[in-house]
Each structure stands twice: as C-alpha cells, then as structure tokens.
Image (cartoon, rainbow, N blue to C red; front, side, top):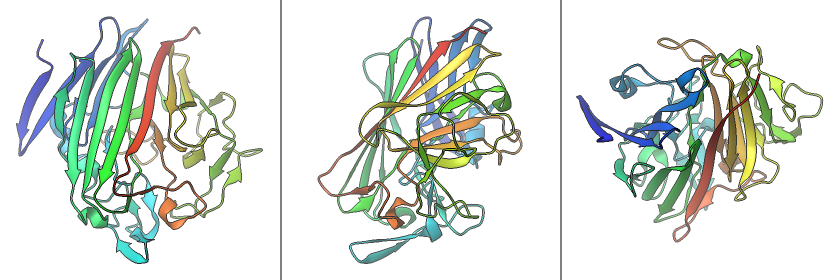
Length: 325
C-alpha cells in the first residue's frame, strides 16, 4: 500500500501514513508537519483520537493550528517584541487582539510546507523545512526537522530539532486537539504540575509562577473537565530535557486513555473554547508540550535562546491505552 498521496488545490498537499499492524494509524501532512488523524483501535472499533477536518484541502485555510507543528515560538510573545543581545526584534502580531505574536505569526511553521520522507518502512516519517532570517520577525536562518515515529503498537513519538546560523529563540510544540472519540466535558484530566503561570486579560503571562494549591488549576489528581476553561501553561515537575509523564486524559465512556510524556518544561492545556464552524466550541482539548510562553521577555522562565552551533532537541510522546469502565 502506497502511504504517500498527493492532493492539488492551489498548493500541493502531501500526506504520509504511519501504521503498525493492530495499532495506530497516523496521518501526517507536509503543511505544518501536521497530524491530520490518529486512528486508534478500541472496543468500539477504529476511532480518530484527534479533531480533524473532513477533507485534507480544508487544512489550506485552517485558522485553528489544527494538529500543526507550531513555532518558531509556540504560544504567545507579548506585544510581538523581544530583545536579544541589546537588539529589539518586532514580530507579526496575529493573535485575536492583534497585540501579541501567537505561534510564530502568520508565516509560522503551521503555514510552511515540509519535505516528507519515510525512514525504515511505514513507522517513521521525517519532516524538514527552513525558515529565513527575519521571517515573521525572528532572527536566524533555521533548519527545522520534525520526526514522527511509532515506538510501539499504541505509542507515537514526536522529535523536534532546530539549528540556527545566529542567535534566536525557539520553542516548538504540536497543536493537536484531542477528542479520544468523545466529548471534552466528559473526560478526566490529570497534569503532573505543582505550579502554573498566571496570565493577564490578554492571555500573556504576568511573569509570576504560582502554586496550583487550592485553585481550579490543581489537576494533580484526575479531574473531570466539565465546564472548566483552560488556556494556561503548567510548569512540569521535572523541568526540561528529562522525559516525564506530563498529563493523562481519559474518556471513561469511550474506554480510552492518553498519557503524554515530554522533555519540554511546560504544558499548555487549552479546552478549545474558541473553536468555531466547521467545529464546535470545546470539541477538542489541546495538550501542548512547550517552552514557557513569553519566556524571551521573562528572564525568570526557562531559557529558550538558541545559539549557532547548538542543537534544539525536544521529544513528546503520545501513548494510548484501553481502560475499563
């Protein structure tokens, strides 16, 4: 079976399928190195665990970062500016308020076409692209590689790699909206985090790192999502560069669980409240393993600076498993 299929509609889309017998079937697009589907065998048959457009061509005009690799800086950089070595950089301000840079701006990785290459059969796909110096306002000519690999029957790993020819800032994440085949409000979530980063009324961190104790952000035990609203960054307990379990999402009705492991220092939990047609508000929930939002303007946050000769490496793993109800 040929797992590479080409589509034409104004621009060329390419889809690669990763699959393992009796396990996951994952579709990756070259546009944004995006996850277009993660099909999981369950007691109710094969379900798509992530929110997906009905047609691949719909991704050409996607405003929701649907399943995309987001960057060169995931989440927000306040007021679309930061300083590096005494030089001020001004970025595209593309969030809803037009005050901040969101996910790298309008020319971020979610809008870039990657070269796709199967490595060693149908269980691994490597996605490559380059970003120009000054693209979206960010410095440095950067080489970006995103590798999707099935580690086992129900386990998908994403490895992010970036190199640069000059000093820059980097934070990549995947922006899949998880459904687990059910409804967000019916699911249980757990986040391995004792603290989170509060935000102001424009959703930019205030610079404070606050305990979750006694607040709605205390997700250290399994908690029904219900009508809770989240679009917040949680600081993970082990910090950065050490693989750790960051979150668990369970749908008892469907009988499916997702465990997310990552080397990233932060996890954005977003309940999808701003989704709109063809989707519905809160139809999917994002678990975005990332660097801290607005870290270039907050020296107390984990550093996201990348120098020439350094190699940005981060890994996120999605592990699915059936559960009893």
